[in-house]
Length: 376
Picture 1: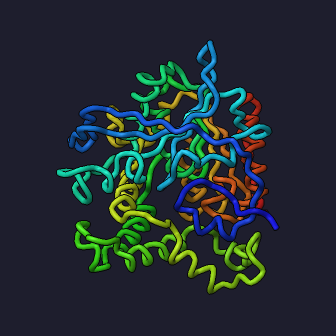
Picture 2: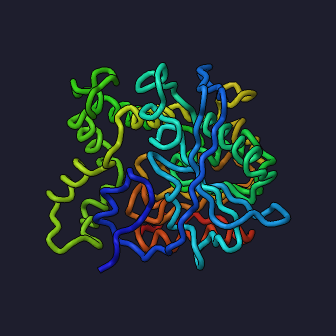
């Protein structure tokens, strides 16, 4: 039987118990922490100490031209890119210097749960995608002395960051890759996220964020709402949750696992903070673009490999097509998968193979556009 897939994010923990997989290499990043004193967020609130946890693989070469940034996705840690990293995969740490940054709000970098008063819990400021990019830019330039990146590669909220990097620092990298993510969160995505927040906060135990114990029922309700959007409808109809699962798996067990083990140990305020960052994401809101997302996309100078999942309900492929039309050097390559949003993190062996093949080709300057939406 295949091992459970390892995507890296705690968000996908329940998926990992039932999804098909491939054996992951034993390559793991080395953990570090960077502290920024008096970090001013976009909201104007200043964090006396902004902590960024990050991981590194490999070493920066003498020329300083082999660094790749892998920004984390929702509630993920530095291990979130194992599907792409390792000998024989698209990113070989024997050749590249890989930096995996962890977003504010994941419970390890500065978060509502680990920041002291007066910014503890619900009083922690909303941190945007741009806040995360600015903090990691300081990390790269001041601590790691990376003057230029070979690429920024991101899945989901990591893809949001990749687009923001290309707009905020258009000359700092050679290329970006965005899988299952977009340059802006549009209205339908905001409505979905608001539904998840409403489900979580409806639990009286949430107590406006000043809870004494985690609001268990609220988190379970949040988990079920999120699960309904995670995979494609056909994934459920074909019962692909059976792949790689124990023989005695049932639909009822699968659903209960999502309900109770979606993000084990997660803090409710942390969950909400990262959802707020997701909601507010818009490269058009970058200073100088006055809310014009199309102008921001036109400003991107570097080649972009844009890989939406053909069945993603979070970031629909139609949004990717809309955005790609404004990017000068864009290869739009939908992932032909029934695995919905997680396809962008190699949710099935076929997804992993497709991603590694095309990311490797793009890194080597060999990518080409495809309009195929064939599903597998």
